[in-house]
Image 1 (cartoon, rainbow, N blue to C red):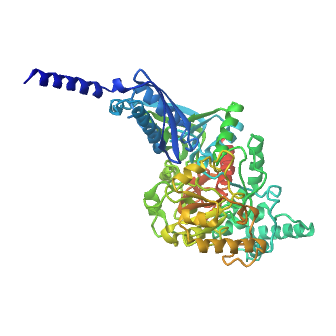
Image 2 (image 1 turned 60 degrees about the vertical axis):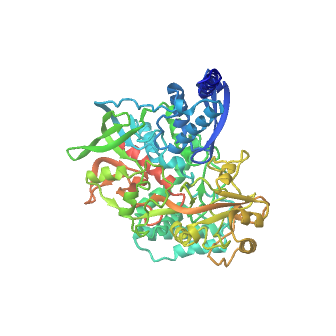
Image 3 (image 1 turned 30 degrees about the vertical axis):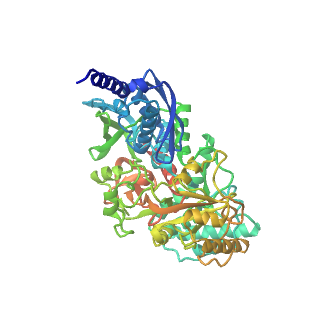
Length: 635
């Protein structure tokens, strides 16, 4: 080999060594990158100093609070601590965890660092062993709306409380719900009128032949209320807890226990007032939301979605220093029974620690339904031809697996109406989430041919069945600028950014109906005819071909651009079956006898909503019966 050749190879080798060493090209500074999370882009700033990850900050996102709160803190901390992006995801927030890690990976590339050098596998902490025993007067399983309502009520009644929650956050399904709370509130519903079509709805219920004594009593009372309403020449909407009860019972095909229904509707207005005393701010006007059948749905003015109920209870616990202990990441596995009485719960923490928690007064099941458990859905379903498998999305958080029902059944509880499973038609066509809507959920629905196909204010099961008959099982909610629920920050009522929805082709925006149709893939001529026909109906609201009784201001289509369309498809939403309870929330066995020491509230119970839950009834059900359970268990 010549000296020149040897020198050339040496220089080339040195050059390759220089360019293969990542530290040579790396640069310090702040690098911003983004990756797609659950709801949209997660924008992350990563600080690099001396070739290491020195800081990570989430700049902006649309991820769901409180589910995403832990990964927002934990994932960056773990990455910095271990100098690796290959850390464990937070269970229940996998897409958010992946997004944060993906954005940091991109930042490492921008800094000229070798990503593989920051990808070593981080081993999880060693699991704990042994058993810890705790005692409280009241033990509650589940920290959703029902569980926290029960915790506050029990603590205010003088009991000390332990709440066990299998997830890393408090909230359950309540935290991701739309936050609609049905209550007969004549002040907030005053903007609506008792139109001729709505009066027909009332009269049809009053003209029914009573099926039992309570229905007869409620009908008689509503007749007197309507007579007084007419005598006063009221122009606002008619409503009452009794009419709410009758409408709810009919909406579930009379399968619910009318006594439980009436107990709910009479206590909902007081619960509404008590939440306000705790700091919850209600919007000025009621709404008619998907499947609510009547404009009596109220929601928060100071919180997005149902998380406001959760934070209100948590704030109340903190503010009053109530004796409530919350054990997160702790799954209840079995009820402990002694001498025929439920006296505690055996639990397992995600860190491996076993807990035996004794309850000296009572145990409350508030663990939710089974909407996220595909096997249970398919096994129990009696409405959807056993077609609720993995190909059908759900609005439920992953932890909603029917745990409470299974535990209760093992100690002899009776499960009722387990086959009654509800689909929510107005959900994200790709994820099943209910948080992608831009306009109110009872605005005009059109299919891909640009045509209406159903009464948008009807029952949820009826609308879902109609939606599943449309092309690709998809449809659109359309609306105008005035009727949108986009705030000044460009986010919908769930806190999701409109730009993220548009980027993901979940929402479409147009300055004309033609432009909207072109972007969304809707037949433009049919869409424009549908809009014209709808506007005509709004000016003279009668004889709608699908039987819709009214056109209220928030669903008119004669407003200004931009116009919106959000693509929707039905998803599993609510399981109406569960453990049988009496009006004091005591769980009943297969013979109808009380199981001593065991109470239940919320979606874990069955026999209230029947075959179809009226939209907006779930939250008051959880909170009202949660309160009753807490008070009863504390006695």
